Image 1 (tube, rainbow, N blue to C red):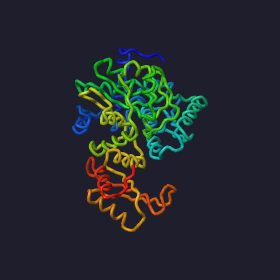
Image 2 (spheres, rainbow, N blue to C red; image 1 turned 180 degrees about the vertical axis):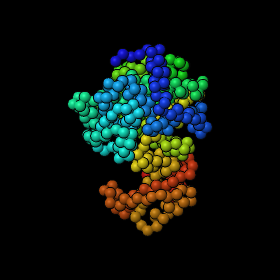
Image 3 (cartoon, rainbow, N blue to C red; image 1 turned 30 degrees about the horizontal axis):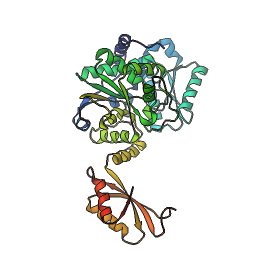
Image 4 (cartoon, one colour; image 1 turned 45 degrees about the horizontal axis):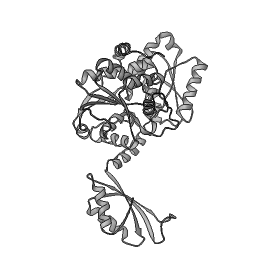
Length: 405
């Protein structure tokens, strides 16, 4: 498909804004004193986690379904997704009077299946992975004459996502940078089209999960690079190959692509909840994570797009634990003790004196690496301030205990 110029791209984004306006929320763009202090710059958060269906994906889906026209919509639509594209397309199809079939992996959490069905789509659970679901969706396209809607590598979808760029420029004057998540690249491509046409001095910076960094690798190489095995819990940006069109637009108009690891993403999820009172998914806070961990250099006024808030509650519990650990709120003490009465009591006494709160204790006596007469223990401690974990380790070492890494 041809790559639009900035002038043509801006026209498409502006047209999309008119199409989707009756159905989408103009989400809040809030200034954050706390995150700004941590990042060392002024920080705004564009809260697409509060969008209908819980993510920005509704914008592109609405614009795409509208652009199809009546004849194409009457064929029915099909897509493969385990997340936000599914819900966005389901609602967009219902609003435009079309039917939609969404193929999802069998292991998709039930809450995501139910929400997609509630928006009016038929859900087919097929395949153990997204690739298998995608293959089945393509088979339905061929066999039943349905029209496949791509989640990112489509100009109408890209233009719909780009409406976020228009809103941000109107809401926050004199920005230095817009920071946003990248999976397949639709959001970055659309926002860059709008921003570089209207305010070319504003940097557009994409953020990927380090375990699914196809766009970052492609950006460096100057050509599309496939990541065969992605490793991240940020399912919204877990993409092994970016689109042809999205890559070309990102290559031309995005200033940089950086990565954050899952621990940094988990910490950002926890801090968004704790400090910002926001529920966001791991992919949704990629831009915020990059800011908090010093990945965005030289910017004084930054808007981070919080792209989605659809998170499985079971996963959220694990993310909270990981985030508390990476931020220093949880500290794991590993010790080798003589297996005699009173040793553990002394350890707990030292931790108490250092104002640590013991949450959990694990014993390991039977391991083949544990010498006879000793036991390895792990003590999970809740801390109150930065550096307290190191202070607890030092206090234990000073009492003669063997603190292990």
